[in-house]
Image (tube, rainbow, N blue to C red; front, side):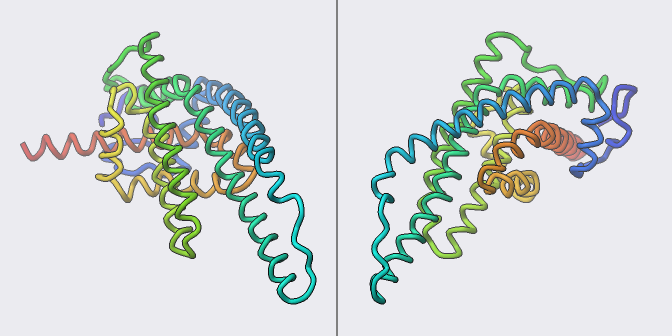
Length: 267
């Protein structure tokens, strides 16, 4: 990637990995990117919070009868049943809140996808300067396509959530698998934005994750950790989403450019 007057000085070639702090500096040094990010934060938070309350209310209404009365703590067996009931209740509450968050956030993610695609494209254009290669134009058809692609990843996210819910009951190993699932899915959500203007299919995006496993893990680990914090995850994810959109975009672009350079050198 060549430097130009429109490029940020911290992104000189041959950069293959851009740390999070550098992406933050990149974002905060651009008033336009920062302003657009703040609008997206408010929009995403509002959609996620509303969806979360709706899903939690529905889950609680369907399960209220089951957890209405605890077994009496009389005798040893009564105490065992009571403690087991309480443990099951707390486990259900935690898991249901995590699931509710992901369902709500996937809805917000899908509806806000065009805005984040625009942010991603603007960040990539600012990074590349005159070397930026225009792909798909920002049109009504493109917006619809972005929403449809976001819906695909949203449905895929529901499958990931169901799988995570099932394996979470496996002691120790299950929790590790859940964390890995959410880590790579987090990366997939952010990867959707820079690949949308290239009109990549979902299969190609998943292929990129498989081919860049270590990088994908590094990009998704912090959002995955944040997403597992009950209640606060709604605010924190909405707050960091624009930053990680820029962070993943810059690293994706740098990796793609480096691979193109290596392929050209081989030829």
